[in-house]
Image 1 (cartoon, rainbow, N blue to C red):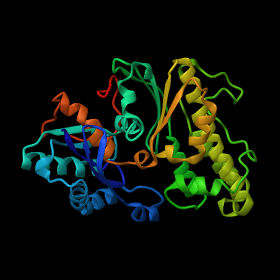
Image 2 (cartoon, rainbow, N blue to C red; image 1 turned 90 degrees about the horizontal axis):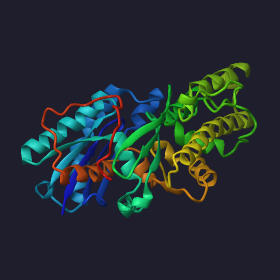
Image 3 (cartoon, helix red, strand yellow; image 1 turned 180 degrees about the vertical axis):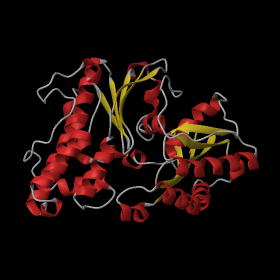
Image 4 (tube, rainbow, N blue to C red; image 1 turned 90 degrees about the vertical axis):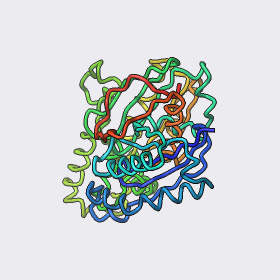
Length: 356
């Protein structure tokens, strides 16, 4: 049995998990820093790193305890080494290096972005990944740092076929919540507030959908842009005399319409890409995939011929189970990293995935 310890510190959650054979989640521990960052309306990298330092030893020990195993039972230690916030990533990477060196077990660096896709199949039909009829898989990875469409074929080839040209959808939610003084993190509070409003009240823009009166360039067919909807919200508040005047029914309608614009673009482009690439499987994953409207709308816009796999909420947000699960495939191929493993902040070019 391959027993992998996973560590995740890419942003503001310290997480550790033990996963057996790439699919059996023995433990999944997450320590959140929301209270620390809410004062600033967003994640402060230096604070995140400090909090990771304070929490990581206890989180890892708890993950091992919950899995009813000791460190000597672990086959390898896996850690997110990118993309993410460098100060935060380095805490996890260096802690994992220490475990690897101290206990003489392999070290495996994991791409957080790819792990989100893999995590969608945890407790959600892992056997699908072995079935040829599952492919190609079209994945919408949508979070605070990423909004991208990834196409994965049966031979393991992977390609980003659409990405955001500016802001990620999760960032657009966070910035809106900050502008409207709703609190942090933006995604959950935007969703909660939107439930009280009319999503058709205000027509916020749907960038790169060909609805603005300008022809959509072919290269942007599956790309995203959310800077325009953020700017539109800013002027919406300004026209109301300032964001302090956006309250009551006006607030609810504003937030509902804003959320509707973002969800509409995400689902519309995903459905179109699924048809274009003839993808029998469509995956929805990443932190924003927790959004209830997005989950329900994706179900309704996709034709029945596309099987929708929606990541379980506990595997949507940052977690280490997806890190440990994915790492099992690297372990079986003996694709280990040296102790010179470094962290990186931006998503690198994607050409293949190891789990196919």
